[in-house]
Amino acid sequence: MVKEIRWTKYFWLSLLSFGAFMLEYLSIFIIEVPLLHVDIQNYTSHQRSIHCIIMTFIWAVFIGMLLLFSKKHYRFPTGRIQEDKISLKNWIVTLACFIGCKLLTFIDWHTLKVIGEAQGKTIFQFSAQYLYYIFEVMLVTLIIIYGQKAVETFLKKESPIPFGGIILAMTWGIFHFVSRGVGIEIWNGISTMIFSVLSGEIYLKLNRRWLHSYLFIAMGYLL
Image 1: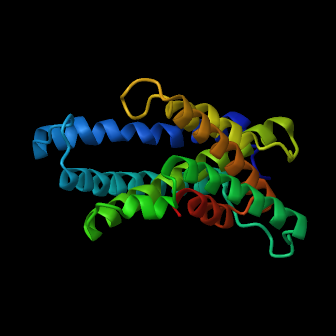
Image 2 (image 1 turned 180 degrees about the vertical axis):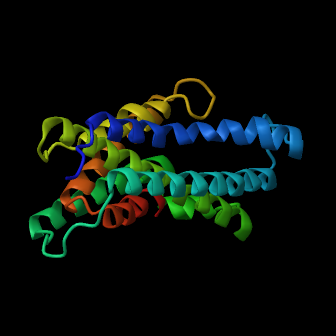
């Protein structure tokens, strides 16, 4: 008999995934300042790239440990059955959400994000930045899937409401109002919250397939 998993277990994994973003402060104040003698107020482009690489390693270890723990103790996340086909309607909604994500990044960059990020960077700097983003989106996806699972476990049924995206908006999204350390940035916070809900909807419309969802969310964020 499989032991029933309480909804709070999944909810804490969602919050823990958000907490992984705070590991950036560990990198800055424990590794970079005392060991690398980095002035966090005046990052050079090269130092910023080194920071991105360090965070990529830290997040990779965290994500690996979290997934191993989750699969061992909760047998989640699991792959959806192959017969669980994604309907044409769901593909259309997914595409609409993806376009919505791209509109948000276009408003920020006035071009495709990948083009804007590449300007003024060396290949090394661009690669380091995008490695950072790739793992950031992994954490974003984990917040969504564990958050959605938590609420659906509480409700004892699957829901068409993107609760995972809402939880992402209330954590990662709200954090972007102040994430750059230059005061409150209204549009940065609002756009990230909208992106969060759209990403949660993508996860649902792709029948909760976490790998498919990650790829679409990543393209919506990175391209």
